[in-house]
Structure formats: structure tokens, C-alpha cells
Length: 408
Image 1 (cartoon, helix red, strand yellow):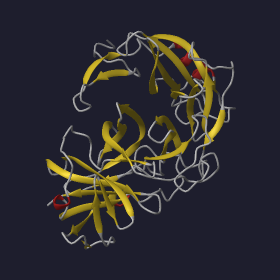
Image 2 (image 1 turned 90 degrees about the horizontal axis):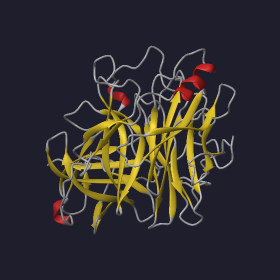
Image 3 (image 1 turned 30 degrees about the vertical axis):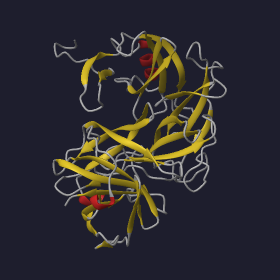
Image 4 (image 1 turned 120 degrees about the horizontal axis):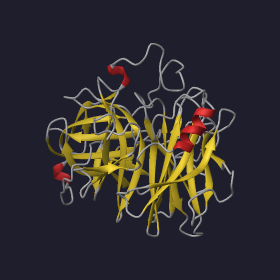
């Protein structure tokens, strides 16, 4: 309880779900922001910041659950990743101390942890960082959860072009046993608007990671594919800020959880859950619609013809320099041009696509090919029109996603 409101300012809420659709609030991870983290940030910012905890990551080690949390001052490298432990994922958690910390003289920024164990070597690795110096990876001691080498800050694994004004942050590291690859999901651009998720892959959790076109993510390039972006289907004002993801593997079924901001008042974020599938090339894609638990057997070719809304998730970017990579001059204002907007196309029973930039389609099992682009089929809930429908998602030759939704 805080100020008689029943809230804990800056704390980490815990919610649970049996179906990834309905969520129940359980409680708070910690009683307060750990004082050592506050002291570190304040010592480097003239007592500014450290008023909340960011981007928690939960990791199970044997019978212990570990939360890696971030405390920082916005727009500063004065940051702290700490570790708290509990015997259940519902807590209560006890703070154990610092894993890595940075200050205003550091190259990197100690926020946004993601932890994974190497399936072959047994080593544990933590990815973290932001556009201050890019994303880094460091080895952890499996037994303690802290840095394997005290004082270690790791090595660079991902950065981007124009990194002084363009954001990269929020690493999420995931293993897919089907392809025996480690996938590094990262988020680009300002969290209020063009926030979007990209991914690279590696044979090892410590990298190097390569993108869709074979570029090393540690080099100063913009990487592909683009998996999410700001978008707008008909009958809806649009979703922006679709980034900072977590990825879970539920017995072979993958889901992406990420924040989204409802236009036109996009200051508050909501959690989106999207079903994730993998193309034959070994690259992931996510459903155009949020997960609702809708189930259907194999989609047949005769289910496809009709009117579709199709969105090409173009790589939209701000045309001006941003303060701290986030805020445009004068602040953010609602503008339809800031969204990837759907267009209607007719998919005929002859395999032709009319009224659009695409020409033909063909269905092969649970895959639909739009011209030369392989797309995975989904059956889900059309949130804009409140009905069940067929969906597809794929990657175009230029590394950006294409989303489709049947509406008639």
C-alpha cells in the first residue's frame, strides 16, 4: 500500500495466466526499489531518476526464480541491473544485489536484461543495453546469477546506424531447437511511435548474430527482418509503440509479448500477445492480430478467396533528430502517416490478387505464398471487426513483414 492508494510506485507487478488471454494480478515483486540501485543512480545524476524499475526478466535456476531488474535515469547511462530471488514466480522476491552497473562515463547502458543458458556448454549469458553503446552480452555465474567475472561488462553484439539519434534497445535472447539457433530480438526507434522489433540469429548465445541479409548485428548497420511496427487496420485508430518484446516457448508453441500504445492517446502502454510461427527459412514471424485462443484445424485453399486487408510493415522513421532517441521537437502528435495503413485486395479462387501490388497466391499446407514471399497462416480473432478470421504473416524480399487479414 502506498499513500493509501494500494499502489507501489515504480514497482514490478506480477500477473499470471493459464491461457495467455485472461490475466490475474498476483502482487508486487519487491516492497520497494532497492536502495543500492537508487544510491548508484543518484550518485551519478545529482539525485535524479531511480524512481521506477524497468524491463524485468525472470529466469529459473533449479528451484529458484530470479528477476533481473533495471533502475536508471531516463536518457542517462547511470543505470543498474540488479538481481532478486524467490522460490516461486509469484514471490516474494528478495533483492540480492548488483549484476552490472554503468555511469555517465560508460560506453554501454545497464538496462534491459535477458538471460539464457547455452544448450551445449551449460554457460549462462546475459544480454543487455541500449543505444548508449549498443547491446552487450556477458557471462553469468550459473550458481550465483551474478557476473562470472566481477566488474565485467561484456562485449558488443548489436548496434545500428545513426546510433546517436536512433534507438536500439530491449534485447531478448531465445533458442529454437528446430533450427538449433539462438535468436536475438531487438527493438528500434522511439517507444511512443515507431517502436518495432527486429531479429538476428547465431549458433551461440554469445554471438555473433547475423540478420536476414547476413549482416553482423555488431556492425553499424540497420538490421532486418522487421517483425512488428506501427499499424492501422480499418475501423481502428491504430497501434503504435509495438516493441520491447519477450518471447516464450510453450512446449513448441512460440508467442511474442510486447508493449503497444493505443492511438490517438498513446502515453499508456498495454501488453500484446501474438502467436509466433517459423518460416522454412528459419526466420520467425508473428500474427497480425493479438492472440485470443481461437483454434481451427488446417485452413483449406477454398477458405482463402475473398476480400483481404493487407499491411506492408514499411520501415517508417522519424524525419527529425530525436531527444535521447525518443522525443521529436514539440512532442508527439497523432498523425495517420505515422502508421502502416492497410489496403484492401481481392484474392480470387484462381489464385490471382487484384487491386494491389501483389499478383498471385498459392496455398501449400499451412503456408500461403504471396508472389514469392512465404507466409504462415493463422486462424484468429479480428479485433477491429469482432469476428473470427484467417490471417497470414510473412517476410518480403526487402526484409520487412507483410500482414494479411480476411475481412469478407
